[in-house]
Length: 208
Length: 381
Image (cartoon, rainbow over all chains, first blue to last red; front, side, top):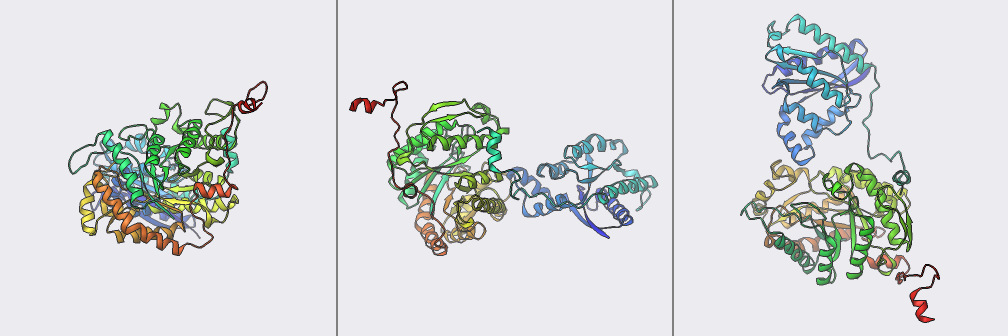
């Protein structure tokens, strides 16, 4: 058995939150799907609500607090990422976007990712395709084709949710599991490793 | 070890009075701060360079020359000199002038500048920042070390037979530090040339400083300038002191809460934990500063930021009294006791002249292109 880490970012605000509930269902399904592929999983959950002030401070100061830095490192170092946001005013929440705004450039490049969202009505569901998917495309993450949306009516079937939601969760989890299992664990890049190009090359590059 | 202060020259409203200093007042205040720095026994005064409000210091050599004339021992430096947007020819000329006027009490700290709109005002583009820093500095070094320079590059008009005047004092250019918060290329540049590396070490977590200094030291050794622990390191620091730490916190809090850069964000307590900011008693500043050595090793220069965010001049001068009377004498003694003998002090003009084998007159006299005769030779004939 090989081991991978899965980071889960949830931007739900209420406690308990339907956003976290959806995140948990996606996580459980992904852990199962990876298990079927011979991969054990370590799960790390990042609740953005706990970092609301840290994120605002990071916008002002330009660096993350120690607590936020730990969560950023969790996400950057994970082999797969599940991101779930409530839909506010036709898009992801400001809290959700702020977390991805404060990440360093290129840190999510190639990262297997699953995107999901919740809202009170299914009429918001395309926000996944017009807001979240372009965001993760910009970040150059490798996003699973199935994005999962859950509206109030999807929870009407009780804890297990509607059959349609269950099958979407399973399909998305299978896609993410394929992406994670098909990729070797990548160590994070170290900008302070000895430079690949010498300073002489830098000088020549400038023409000086 | 050298101790001093550095200023960014911001003109900021005092949040406790609502009063905003006039440019003229703030400029004169900085002159008073520099003179006070020498009076209380500090070693270094460094002045920033900016080309946009709310800063006044567009022409650091003018200011530093005035200070040079009014002081005797103070080492004058910059924090920083914009190696990207200044013409390296003008830097070579201006700082050689200043070096002569100040009898060698001059060094510089190179920085890129992080304000995008400033670059096009000087015909440049912030996206070329690293390349500009590399090309311009390579030219600057040649202008100081070679009497006649032929040069062609990407970002400036070519030079044919150019001599930058005056030549550096005693034939030895000012020592150069390179400052960067987190671009490894700049630490690499400092290491390549055997120059100093200055980590601003304010407003940012110490981890940035630790990583950059460790990298610079490793590359300094790689390029054969000496052991990693012999590389020349400077650090910034930000302090506010009163005899009682509670008084310091209460007095500084409104300035902190409204400060440019970090104000309206984290609490003073959070920021003090996350960055090297120390607000408290002189003893707390001593203890925190001695701790810097734990993550950068033995270093050569410690500069403190004491005058920003609208603090009135009177308060800043009181900070300098505390630094000079209570903090720096202890730090001097403690750091000196800890430093191994093979770790060098910060280079000065005297030490660099000695290393060059003594002073020499570097004057370049005008030559006649056709006969090759100099004016002097003609006069003697």
